[in-house]
Image (cartoon, rainbow, N blue to C red):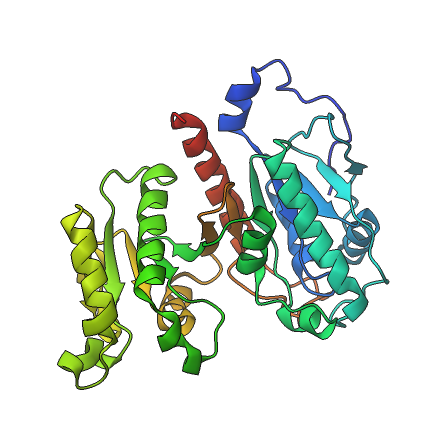
Length: 349
């Protein structure tokens, strides 16, 4: 893996605003250091040198991982004000708390993971990068370290000072937005309030217009209960919460279909007539999407003041260090971030 260590980019004479649209800088966090994140970052950079990548990580970890893979990357420590070029691996250095071993979680490194995310958010907010692309993290080890942590999405909202964000996963031909995310199933029904559902629909609808260039988004909204409640016989959330919200938003001109029974919502004829599916909980919508496009699907956080995409898989501790991890989802996340950054740059503010 020969990556250029030059400090000047061949495109440096192109006006800055055109470079952002054509090839934006992507801040990338590899995630859990004991997982496959560092490996897929290096594979992605090797296989797709056309991207401009600013990794937020420990450069020593990347070099050690590259050594195990038989790569010889030229990793350059990046400083604010210096250029990020395609064909190189620029690294904003964050030091590990303890040495990382593939497949072996270390609670002391949980603070390292959180620091890389926080620093990457700063880089995007300060304009050093056009979008954030995140690798897989391990929620359990972060909680074991003593830090209450429910997920990437919620942490990014906290860092950004945003009260509500939406997790959406996208695969070729299918997008699924979630009303609730990482909750025990017994808490889901109470979490689906009119205010929450309305906010998720509005954020999703606006994002499809502004970041995906869909002029009139069409959303298919699932029911919570089997058969969408069967007229109240299998639950009343569709009658008391979901239906009234949809009715009110339809009156404003939003194109919304639902509440739709989840067991028939993902049939191809139904999907042909919607731009996104709004699912009530994590495992209602995501198993279908991941079956539909695992390895090519992308996790997107809507409602943040910046663009964030992520891989669709976890840390895969059993694969870490083996050299067999696939960088396809990271590539898909980078392509999506690049496209969204171009759309945002082209949209009048």
